[in-house]
Image (cartoon, rainbow, N blue to C red; front, side):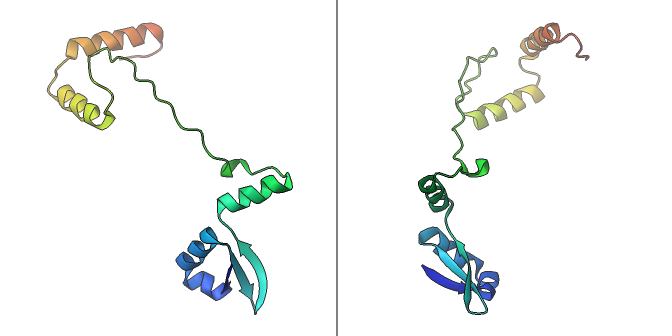
Length: 116
């Protein structure tokens, strides 16, 4: 575990963070150890070993699952960026206007409070 002064922490933040991620870092003030900086993974491991709750913000996030439903206008939505660009280009050139209007009518029927 590497040791850094509080001035090192101010001037060499990147070095201190790298050390903390790899093996932990001790931060000193006036030559005395004052704080220990750890990676999130190590902190969570220690919390688990101690039987203490891990703060919610540090828990791993569950991956987002995207289900690709067939697009009513026939677009291949597997490549979102490409299809978004194609849809924008076709909207500007008024391609699929009838199909888009039909989709909007279906939405308006489901949500009658929406206005044009």
